[in-house]
Image (tube, rainbow, N blue to C red; front, side, top):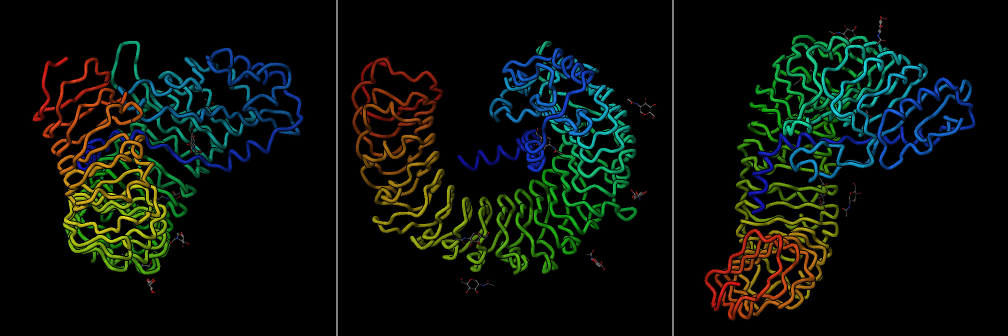
Length: 600
Ligand SMILES: *[C@@H]1O[C@H](CO)[C@@H](O)[C@H](O)[C@H]1NC(C)=O
Ligand SMILES: *[C@@H]1O[C@H](CO)[C@@H](O)[C@H](O)[C@H]1NC(C)=O
Ligand SMILES: *[C@@H]1O[C@H](CO)[C@@H](O)[C@H](O)[C@H]1NC(C)=O
Ligand SMILES: *[C@@H]1O[C@H](CO)[C@@H](O)[C@H](O)[C@H]1NC(C)=O
Ligand SMILES: *[C@@H]1O[C@H](CO)[C@@H](O)[C@H](O)[C@H]1NC(C)=O
Ligand SMILES: *[C@@H]1O[C@H](CO)[C@@H](O)[C@H](O)[C@H]1NC(C)=O
């Protein structure tokens, strides 16, 4: 089941690319709090702000302070303390619509979001604010309108953030007039033509990035989600920006296969994110390999093939390497000994086709204690886990599921006190798991050991150091006794105990301990006993107890949100309760029991 979900994840990777929410620059927030003061507002600028306000809808009254004379005190407005000119307008909407809402039919991203300002046509009155240095309108709803041309006249701007604002159409080349710009973020602009019942997401686009060359001071450029598929010379154009520190072009439809012709000019670049583009070429000899100052390199979901280049060994500042969801083959290069800053290594969903032990032996020793995430799930890895894995003391995520890893789970894993996610499911691991394998895991939240030939041998009085949210032990040998240590796991959302050789009475604490859980599966065991007749206190959406030896009646009151109930192949008896209330039920299987009477 979890494996299925993860397969879905690969298919949905492109959609996930829509949801790359970027980390806010906290220093700007701090700056926003510090400024302000007792300036006098310039009346022409006040009028401009008021006519901007008049052109928008503000359902929750975010701009309710925009009245009276002193516009320098208005929410989001800052003036220069000497001249009184408005220098900063920060109307960022920090409330983001939730993930489900976005995924469900691509509804207009921000219209779901009452914190938005809704602007069908931005008043060009703002062009009066000629001293503006900082403009942030991100997270609001511009309803598919184009970025207004007058923005190009605000020539003092240093910071322009129009991300996640539902802008559409072509990027105006007038942005090239903002020659002082240091930060430009126009990422995440999607809109949908709701009025014509359209289910297609439109995005900002451009065929020509020549205007970029007039922005020589750019430090931080994020054009993620802008359609750049028709821009042929993007590498060449961006290579002129030797001042760039952060460059993000996630999901831009980039395909060009330009390789390193001349030396790269981006000598200050620290963050390069080209995820979710379809380069469909070998990763070797690409233009960015001489950027030896890079700290974060995000190249996931890019259709790279071939080997992982040895040039990686010269990028000794690297902290994050994300090469997940590609078609890469083979080990990491053997020259990483000076990469002592590694924190995040993502190689999942590739065809590595090598031993995980050899792979990990190429991780430099100096990084053993710095690496926080090591993700190599679905990567055709074989071999054993290295015994020194317990020396990776900062590890928070160890994800190596769905490979062909053999051998035992090294006891050292149990010492990884920072570990929150341990995924080793879907491998060929074998042997005994004792409490020592878990004794130091006080931060563990998610444990997946499913689909291995592991046998848990744990003292019934053991009190685990962790409170898990998700446990998957499917097909491991956990029984015959129902594991008493689960009793302490009251934070469980997801519990899979299918086919775990449980031969016991289902404990009465089960229904209280897991009352908050969403998915409960203990099918394919030899569980005995009956179910409580009232399960209304439970939050469960999916309850699977099929193929056990359960007896008694089908519960009269089911969990209110239940959508899947599988109780087939047991020995339930009696008649079905009349008036079962389960309005969200989608799947019900009661086959192969001793239930009698009519179906209500
Ligand atoms: C722009 O605003 C978004 C939030 O709306 C934020 O996540 C992002 O970091 C900002 N971009 C820059 C370059 O500051
Ligand atoms: C951009 O600059 C050019 C040349 O300086 C000028 O002609 C044009 O009007 C400017 N555009 C905007 C939108 O300010
Ligand atoms: C490198 O950057 C400088 C300064 O921005 C620029 O003048 C030069 O043309 C760039 N070189 C290349 C090859 O793009
Ligand atoms: C690494 O850098 C050194 C020194 O700059 C250079 O001689 C060598 O060719 C580079 N190696 C790779 C694999 O790029
Ligand atoms: C690995 O951990 C063991 C046990 O904690 C320790 O004795 C050893 O020195 C560590 N090795 C390295 C290279 O840190
Ligand atoms: C967790 O990681 C930090 C460094 O990131 C380290 O200092 C600490 O010892 C680790 N905790 C445990 C319990 O290993």
